[in-house]
Amino acid sequence: MKIIEYQTIVEEVKEMCKKANYNLGEDVYTAFSQALKTEKSETGREVLSQLIENADIAKAEQVPMCQDTGTAVFIVELGQNCQITGGSLVEAINEGVAKGYGEGYLRNSIIHHPLDRKNTGNNTPAIVHIELVEEEHIVIHMTAKGGGAENMSDLKMLKPSDGVDGIKEYVLDIVKKAGPNACPPLVVGIGIGGNFERCAYLAKKSLFRPIGIRNHDQTIAAMEEELMMEINRLGIGPQGLGGSTTALDVKIEAEACHIAALPVAVNLNCHASRHQTSILM
Ligand code: SF4
Image (cartoon, rainbow, N blue to C red; front, side, top):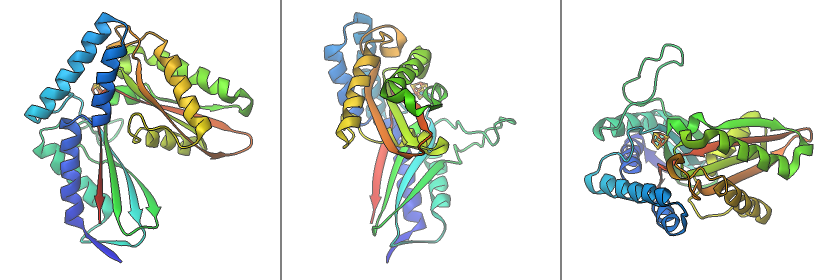
């Protein structure tokens, strides 16, 4: 049995929150640089250059790359042979988020209740998804998910007869409707299958996969490539000012579902696609 201290998790999460907001991931940075070579619009290239400069400044000065420092969302692979001592996992994550957002001067964006709209003052509670795994370690994946892109996300219960063409048509429609509001260039996360709530989780989970890494299922990987091409033909472009780089990547996660159902969720991520992973062992 592996023992992991509550305080170890708090400290790790605190640093993850700061790093995610200050340091754009290598995968996103590389995708910006590649897009700069292929972007057809001059304005689009200018926007991409500004995004690269913005990421460089954030990293050099250790300041947030965007004023919206996001909802802290976690997917935790919890080894069933681990014991957390000194408190609960979710408490430790929330304490880490509160410390990270406080010490890091990151904007607090979470409210107590959707109707009273009062800010909790420390960006908690975080959203925590736990997956139990047969390991002796804990893997913490964190994203600081921007509100603008989240607002343009969507879920639809398609009919099985809608098939692949129906899924593509729906995804393209959501990206078109989002236009500039999701702060493109985007990472488009798609969940297919499961049920109503599981499908939304799959779309979110897909966004934790680094840019450029395809789904291991060849059919799904081909769909990711095809949708990527079709989305980039929409002409929305960087920051919605026109161009050929509307998406930096498309990610799909698919799972078993009911014979009568074809749930599809689209979770959009903005160009501030911030994620961190940490392994505690
Ligand atoms: S959606 Fe993303 S880029 Fe847009 S304001 Fe929010 S964090 Fe910033």
